[in-house]
Structures are given as structure tokens and as C-alpha cells.
Image 1 (cartoon, rainbow, N blue to C red):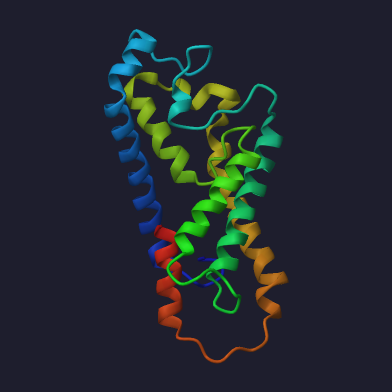
Image 2 (image 1 turned 180 degrees about the horizontal axis):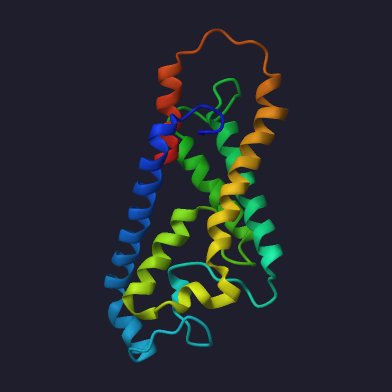
Length: 201
């Protein structure tokens, strides 16, 4: 959204921080809700890898068959697909989704991406969704192995979605948005508010 000028650059760090803290808080909630189950399953020894690994409840880790390059490409493609779909849904010059149904449609898109592309590493497709919980597990008993596991996998779900988001935005702009017929003047403020609501959703 920032690349396309639909979200002001000053708001970008606020969104990043809010999503990171939200993901961290969500991890705290999951840990608290399932604390007894975790203790019974692990006997208090939290493992990052192996048959009794539980760190992957919170953050993504690569499957055994997945290379670093394949994992990076996986995240670029999945995130680009997500951004393309979000832009298509929220672009007022497309048919889009019925008003008020945008969050539901985006949720269904995320589910479809997960079902079709989740095998390799669990489709993180959002740096905050992976990095926030990973920091939580690092301080909650799993230790710094959460950053070393999978050949230092942790940076893939951070960098891959950033590249994928830019790719998706660029593809949409070059192949769709540039080719729209000149519309009647839109209310830019309302359009920007719509993008912000969808992004936060």
C-alpha cells in the first residue's frame, strides 16, 4: 500500500509495530490457554526441533525437504498472490467484493493460500505474524534455537513476504491499475480509509 501511495509512509511504522505487538500478544494468549497441555506433552522441556517440537505451534519452520531458496521463493509467491488479491478486491475501479464483505473475502483468500501453499513452511506471508511469536518463544523457554533452527530460517518469513508484497503491488500496478480507463474523480480520503481498514483487518 505504501509503494502504491495508498498508505502514507508516516503510518507504515505504526502498522508494523501494531501488527508485531498483536502477534506477540496472541502468542502470550495461546501459551496461557494451553499451558497445562504444553507442560503435559513436553514435561517442561520445550523443543524447537525433533519429534516433540512445540515451537512450530507459534512460528513457522521449514519442512525437511525445503531448501532456503525454495522457502524464500515460496514466501515471495504466496505473499504476492495475497497482495494481488487484496488490491483487486479493494480497487474501486474493479467489481470487487460487496461493501462490508472485503475482510471476509480476504480471509477466504488467506485460507485458500494456506490450503494450497502451506505444505512447505506453513504460509507465514506476514513478517509480524512470524517474528512476533518467534520472539515470544525465545523468551518463554524455547531459547535462541528458534532463530538457529532450519539453517537460521527465521529471516525467510521476514524478508520473503516483504519482497513478495512489493512484487504483488508492482504486478498489479503495471498490469491492471495502469490500464484502467480514466475514472471519475474519486474521493481520495474515503479510498485511503478503506485501504487502512482492510489492512488492519
